[in-house]
Image 1 (spheres, rainbow, N blue to C red):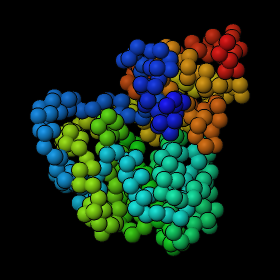
Image 2 (tube, rainbow, N blue to C red; image 1 turned 90 degrees about the horizontal axis):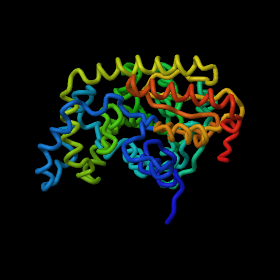
Image 3 (cartoon, helix red, strand yellow; image 1 turned 90 degrees about the vertical axis):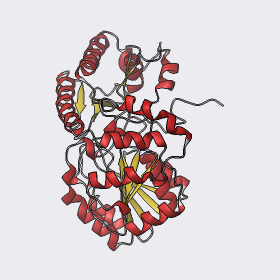
Image 4 (cartoon, rainbow, N blue to C red; image 1 turned 135 degrees about the vertical axis):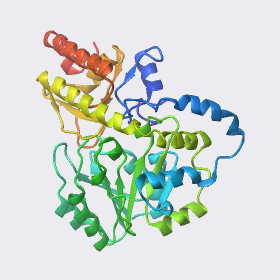
Length: 375
């Protein structure tokens, strides 16, 4: 069975195997700016820790990741019974939608594609509400559409824009949803990478509010998969009682325990992200060819200012130079001028900036760089 480049992943970044095949790159040579993972990579010493743990994979993992859940509850200052751990935030999004079986699911556009995929798998009607880059949602209009049995999904900070919404602005929305008989799923997967934990709503124990957090992103573990869902204690206990007890594999549990013990790692991460995000934003803006949207996390959404800019050609040309950026034209509401880049380390960011400048210089002489022609 053949697949297009995006069929199996819903258009996500980070599909390096497909990228190598498409652009005939030798494995290991692409620098991946398409996937928003901690630029530091996993904490130092983690690989050695996992090597030592390998002999124990002959036994079943601890059910419900008990020790990791306990320590993660302390880390987030939450009651343990409110936490459900899973094989990444994405799995937990799908699990929750199947559990809740909402009649309608309201999702922002543009946003992470898994909200819609999970909603459709759960048999729900999907309603998109506009959340254009750089703008605030129309809270009044959105609230007016919610009714009994609906689920409102909101991502903070937003993906792909990176915009961080204030807790004070989201609280009335959450309250209004409760009054309308609707539930809320708040995706806070990137809040740990912003350094703005005060904007999180995970501390609120409300019967209609669920918060999902990715742990693979902050700890650089996308290949292991780890995430948590924060919700009403009684319902989380019920899911734990009747759901898969081995949702988190043994190595992922060991990795989570190790990462939680690395006290300086997150502080170093936040410093690096702030410095390198500013570097990328300033240098890409300075070209005069792009609009860079303000972001609080470890990625930037960028729009080509030239109406003829074609992200498909731009991505392909940079891939030939060993740099993989994320096309954003498959996000609802975004066109062929948008792409997204992750914040990485300085040497890699310098290489990307240099490649973009060179691409623009060549484009001045070769107009087909802006038409998307492959001739």
